[in-house]
Image (tube, rainbow, N blue to C red; front, side):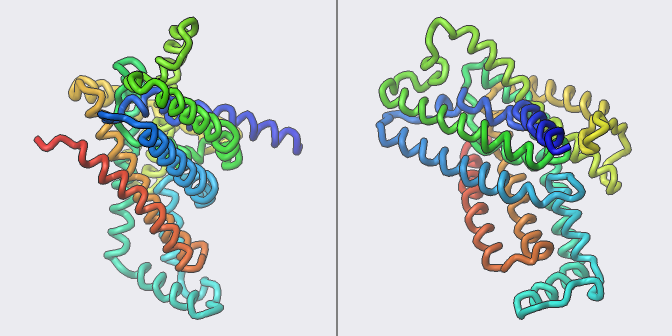
Length: 360
């Protein structure tokens, strides 16, 4: 039984490489190419590599893989899972709460009772949850277009791609086991991407004029076309992560009567979180085509995608901080440090993305 459980976990981890981490896996294709550098020096590339490394490590590895994935609700992830956890605990009667053991827990209990009775707090949590849900569904529309255009149209999408796949990691929790998602990221995705970024930075230090298409310029000539074909196919697969997240979120919305009734098909007998909705799938397809025809420009799509991704990450940070205090009863100072660290990083990314939004 133990061997069967381990083999199943490793199989799910293998499946997650494409389904969950497809977006992260193709970021080396266009990340360096998208930078608006003029006179580039070795220090510029080393500084950029440092930013990528620490952002990828802290947001992808620490925040999501090692911390946020544990805030599931009956195996489901995403902002709706955080919302359900908070509502469940904020609405508990005082008699069912654990007795406070110190002044800190007593203060938290009183705040929790107030929040549970406050219409303003209820509206705030619900509004933030719906905003994040809409942004994830928007990502599900934009991701196929951004991923394919990044591989085919000059590879010049500008977005905070080194952390975009992290939110899909949490939102797709219902489709895969927590351990399988963690294994896939920590053993394969993280080291592979870090090594690739380091290699590209080293190549560009010696060949700064090749920044426009760094990945393919660094590819040996005899494998260029196979690499191009594989990267294009990988870009197509990369959209699957957030599309799966849309299915999970729509299912949760339907359960809470926040979305029209649509057909939800359970695709696995072993994992109840693996669902598919044909109506949602075809709606995403039609909207994706309309978006591509409407924007015409891959960089504009990338900017919109980046803003949506960071807004979801910010909402997750805010709501998860509340879960740490209200549900897990972690010391408020530790929760505050978590919030300040990750919210500041995500706010800086959001400000950087907003500067790229057209003024007219």
